[in-house]
Amino acid sequence: MEPIPYAKQFIDEDDIEAVVKVLRSSHLTQGSKVPEFEELFSSYVDAAYGLAVSSGTAGLHLAVKALGLKAGDKVLTTSNTFVATANAVLFEKGQIDFVDIDPNTYLMDLDKLEAKLAHSRPGEFKGVIVVDFGGRPVDLERLAKITHKYGLWIIEDACHALGARFQDSHGVWQKTGNCKYADISVFSFHPVKHITSGEGGLITTNRKDLLDKMSLLRSHGITKDSASFTQESHGGWYYEMQELGYNYRLSDINCALAQSQLKKIDAFLARRKLIAQFYNTQLKGLKNFFIADTNPRFEHSYHLYVARANNRKALYDYLRERNIFSQVLYIPVHQQPYYRQIHNWNEALPETNKYYEVSLALPMYATLKDEEMQLIVDSIKSFYRS
Image (cartoon, rainbow, N blue to C red; front, side, top):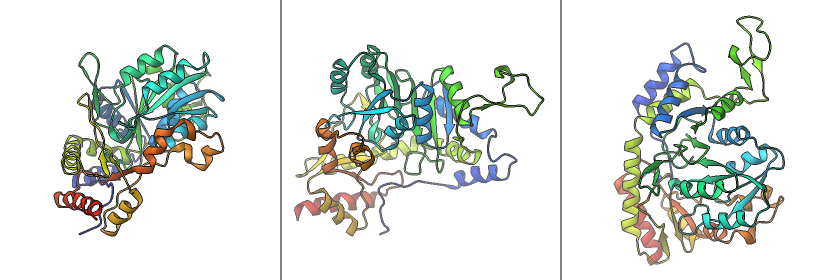
């Protein structure tokens, strides 16, 4: 049997044809495919606006900058994430602080967040970046109630969670990225995610002022909109650089692929949920191997299927010997050498540390075959029997 990776993309002939069509067109970048995809994606998640960017990391950076983060401003986030979540704050010379996770969900513990804010100085923190880790959505309604008392903005790092949703206190299903409770949400289209554009990301928001700010910053801080010029136009070629921006654009080639992939998202999500159900059924109750809790109010989109495994390193090696490539996601941000030199958060984050010691992500992608799924669970059972 071929090696089984922890994740991989699925590309079909429709995807290839969509990219080739752009390659044969007159615009490889800054053409019509970018706004088309932005509109389709924002509509899918029920947000007012979408802005395509070169990566999820670029999206997070634009988000904190657009929300006015200044040098020295403090932001709260989780350490159980990829480093890009926290790095976005440091890019703007802000300060980061971490909140521990809930051991049942692996998400930021909102009780601990509330307690931390209750003991903070007035104005000490400017905002919160929460992560829908693995595809499980954060209770943004509750988060918004907590942060509103302190005047904090919310960025939702939804890079794992396309297609996830949660049920609010009124029984209404809220899609990840709809920005009903968050100021900005950020998605990633890296090949291991639900859909891919090769590399790329997208920001959603319901605030036109934030959209305009991020649009300007995405392209060097340059505008060609005559209505916003601060000086008299010199002619049809005229443009103005009004901010120190970046080249965070996404090309038409990338957007054509992402648009084609988005047409298949419901099928991708259905298959991932079926795989998760299989794992849950087959592995529930297995001694020394613990599957994550579920809650009917939170619809998981399963970018990752993460379990907790005793003797994790030996199991990881055992699976690799059988060409099954599970993964550990992530090394907590606060344990990285760069962050350790900023501050020692170890004692403040016991649940995050415990999670890292035992967590293991099993293969999870839409084209995982039934016989591969069976081999994975049989191998795990065999390891613990031996």
